[in-house]
Length: 167
Image 1 (spheres, rainbow, N blue to C red):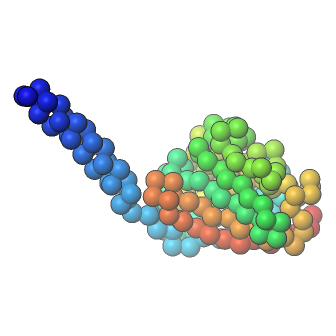
Image 2: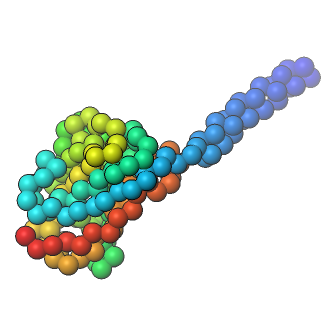
Image 3: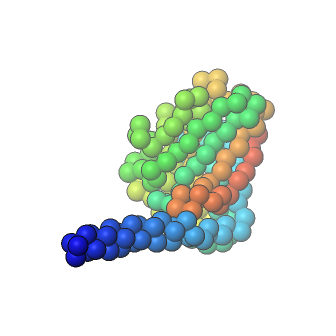
């Protein structure tokens, strides 16, 4: 009988501890990015070359690069991609760091704070990635919606809509 009570108490402690840690993560506040801007660069930029999207942090809290995910959506083409497991060690996303069934991100190239081991995303710094404009996925005039997501909380840190320009 005493053994069953001990097992029950131990099991309750383990389940309770897990539930408390999950609740702590769910209640984690979303850092504040007071302002952000996005641009479509047709010349070499961000370490990726032509057709690079830059999302610049213009003010607010410092965000660790490992807490960032990037969601990219082309609403006109009903296409989307997601960059995860950031930062990367170089400038190329590996297979586990990108979900891109619609071939939006060109050569899986990234730059700025999510490349080369990462640096905190702070005012003046940018997230950069190259889109597949030359390959025909992103056409001139297409809207590109980019959301920078705070991975631990699932909250949106920044959301920008950019129009692809011709080269």
